Image: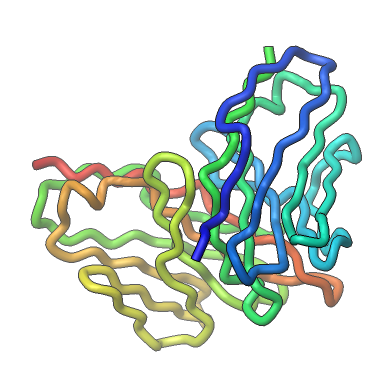
Length: 113
Length: 114
């Protein structure tokens, strides 16, 4: 069984740029959720994708957007980067029969200068 | 506003001690409470609790939920240095009939000294 993978591991961008983060879900999982974890804080829910549609969104502005592909992998896109976007971005996958039991990937550490 | 509060925020104990981590919550439409261990990056799943009073156990770790008083505890007995990590509590509380994400607490940073 393959776990959740994310790429890249680290990324450095400057203010105003755009970034795309990628996530491959665990084998057999069709639901992907994205979280932002600032230093010293718990993860904050950004949004969730199920069957290629957004299926729930947290309190994040529209410049945070996503996609899910037919193989259930997913992308998180952030436009017009701000300094406060610096964080660890975590992807979690789950199955539709147990979607609250989420399994996390190793994350992408984004630094915005 | 929905919230999940963990205490203590940090804890330092010696190897062999027993620790109790706390998680209280105030959310609408509670469905389940989950515990995760985060060592470097990826939180790893420990327990999911849905019913009051039923203890879940895995080795030296155990957890229980009280839905009347709205809290959960995570116990670790005979602690080892490998237990050093941030322990995250999260609550699943879907709104609007759809599936939403988990609401996390800030975590308890546990350090086990040899």
